[in-house]
Length: 564
Image 1 (cartoon, rainbow, N blue to C red):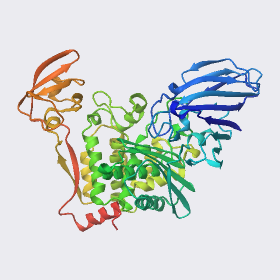
Image 2: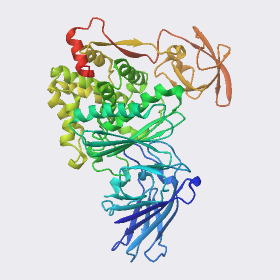
Image 3: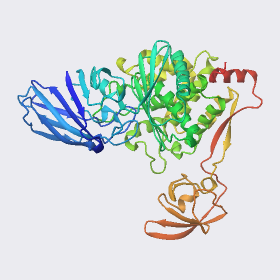
Image 4: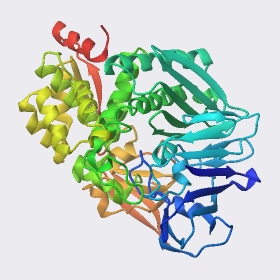
């Protein structure tokens, strides 16, 4: 048994005081490792920068020699020690779904941020004790033996079980079949408890019915509801963290769309990723990057089904679901990175570029393009099988054969299942969708026609973006359309001070054939004329039902969206 104790003498310092006790008999030295990334975020994470006052001691309380052998590894000389106690502090003050926050209102810990492990102790049970005030309510999927006392079967279970505790925590509960669910909310929510439970239960029922059961008896939604803009979710085997806002009355409709969208998405991850997993991540290796080619499965399939389940369950109506599709179309077709990187390349390059916008838009999103490719595959399989099968049958087959306990899946194995269910003729489509930068629009038009829908071209709502080909934040240019004429005149990072002798503002700027920009570039300020051309930039599409759709097409539409 490994003992772990977490205390916080002064929550206002945001410091977790952590003490870990390991049996190290017959080990002359021990590497103590802090994870360098976390599941659900496929990039390196700087958790180690929050560690301070690292101190190892033997069973007699005597200090042991140690040195930093890698940025996230402390090597301790244990000598003849039978036991090592490691103490250190972790600065917990970053609010999102994958980090930790300690203050005078809450204890919010993603243990993967802050708990060290050793490779020889990774499968040993952990006895966790946390100094949680008696008046605090707690949401955590670990077995709780008493207030603040928890048991984890091993390190993986510990770091896959985030904790939120607060006296202000509200916990709602519902059940589907024999499975129990809780929704723990910290912060204001502009909707009634009854409304939240009703709609959470709808998409939960739909997912369980289609997947034929649920992988865990108890599942917890842990919600950080904020008064500022945020949107983030992270999946875990038996729970999820959802962080979103703003939660005021003025933004309640957008808040609810976010809440339902991220909750349904993360619930589907209970199968896809937390259990169905790429071979490279079966098991997880937390001490180094773990590149995969199959982000189109992990996040693409999940993004697609997270939204589709909301429609099929009745949480969203058809216009609301089409609104989500239109958002995906905008995010994909306005991204010139779709012309530069394949979906597989972008999946691998997450470990290089992370989730930030890269220069010249050189990548696509495994979430966005992945979801659109999932849509194409789903409707293709439905067409090829006369609606006897769909993409969900691929997910179910992956769950049957390729969980992390079975060694995960490879790209080739995913292809084989897709061909088995969707027909051998689907193979060239897989190559096009995942391994080329060919445009998706013709494929989308073709499959949407089978369900009586069409893609309508859409010009970007902002004329300056459409005609000049730039995007900006504040008054600083953040992106210029790839291959546009404007690349000859303006640069990313330029500050627009005025346009056509009018002080620059976000909206309502008049555009002419010749446009005079006053630009600040570095230390220089100057005027430059940028013409418009016949080209239009950042165009997209929107989905509509065909006015002359046949009865067969409308039947296919209903089967796809769950209308019948």
